[in-house]
Length: 180
Image 1: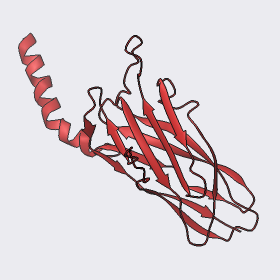
Image 2: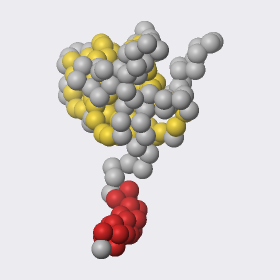
Image 3: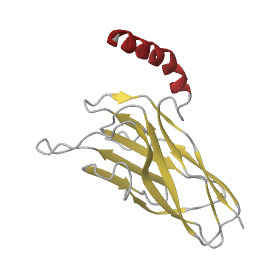
Image 4: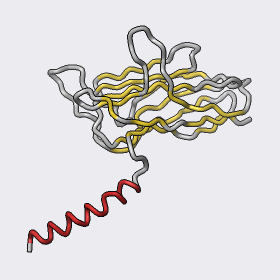
């Protein structure tokens, strides 16, 4: 009787697994953003989120916020209260005048002190703080992925597991809307 109950449960899970995966928010490790509306002269925050199906030991996320008409300023990047706040290495970068924000995480960098990788889940990984100048025109700015040129380091969007294998990941563009 015990084995038939286990077998029935296994069969139910097997047939329901595809529908559970189809109901997930995303099908792979995915970075996505808050949609934000701001006014000229305001300081505002944009939440950066990660839905991950794999356990992750690290990631690097360059975010471009370039526009031909709207010049926003990235004030800071915070990891407070994020899912990766406990990671040993956190690397925020805001290159001047490039309209790029970059952050990277590695769960452990000291072999004597191991930190757990980020388990599968969904939630905040960073908050990026921006300013819109007083004379900022109305319009939209896309938050997109890109590559930051560097002669020695590859600053591309990537996520990896505990053995350093790069894993599949997607980047869902975000949007900042400036309204007058």
